[in-house]
Amino acid sequence: MRTLVYPYDEDFEAVIKYGDFIETMEIREILSPVGWGLQNKKVGENIPIKTNINAVNWERIDALLLIDTIRTNLHINEILEVVKLSAKFVQKIILNRDIDEKSYACIEDICSNEKVALIDVRRQTQLRVSDNKQLKSIYTPVIVVAGMGECCNKLEVQMFIKRYLNKLDYNVCVVSSRKNMEIVGLHSFPTFMYGNQIDESEKIIGFNHYIKELEIEENPDIILIGIPGSIMPISEKHSEFFGVFAFEVFNAIKSDMLLFCIHNNIYTNEYFEELKKLCKYRYQADIDAIIISNHSYDSLSLQTEGTIKYLSFDDEEVDRYRASYPDDVYSRAMYEKLAEHVIETLSEYADFQVM
Image (cartoon, rainbow, N blue to C red):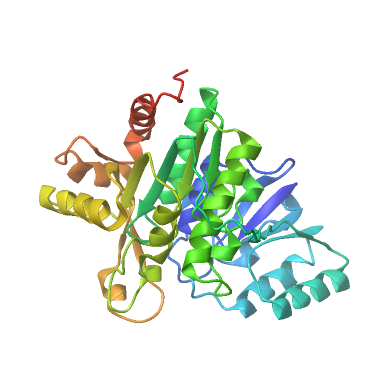
């Protein structure tokens, strides 16, 4: 099934590079909204990112895949316009994005009028009500990937490590930091964690029980958990969930290894030490590795309301500064070394068998 992806963002690059898409799905075209600064770039197997839907070659497309995004400045009307035009050419609209009931009904009507199949591949993770209000022990080694916000290579690190360890015949269970990831064989961060129907203590217990269920069902060698947002607000205008998700996850489970992603910038060794102290005393978690991402904040957007903008850097630019950092600071060019470090660290645990 030859597929057009929309609305593409920086974070989804990792999905295309490392994701095992559902059977028969092949990414042929990528469409990103105007103003996101991604035009004229290429991803995957040299697939160009387009921002004009009229530039799409419909003769080589069978389906439109609607995805979630870390960007928040996309109006539903823009999505519906893409759906309307796509429905004139494709055979299927694949919904893998959170939308409200009214918007879903609009997409249903469009597909019905154009005689196009609407396939909803989203999965809602409901909280299983239990009388047991106690935290359960997790015996499988747990790796947590956290970071200083979005667009800092968190998802990429999760997916690379999973693929690397899978090749060594490890069974890795991933609970991603991104929504709707079942389409590439990952578990999404649970739906009930985003809502306000239950209080914080119920979320903590619910998340703990959810991880325990996955441990029992999948019997993995490693559980890898990605945390959405930041561990703390990044500016007065941008809270990044106030670090609530990090608070909930670290209270729900004990991490055996913490990989921490930060945006590209010029850092001092003192900064890294303070970051480690912050995680140790606020979350009782020791940072085992720091990963410098290929993106940084547009500093002006941090001081204004609205969507945060990001700047992108190639691997060489990132490594230019990383070379002067401590040995436990990594970059994209060092992912294999990072994965080897993961294996070495986990080999210290009695229940983890080095293959």
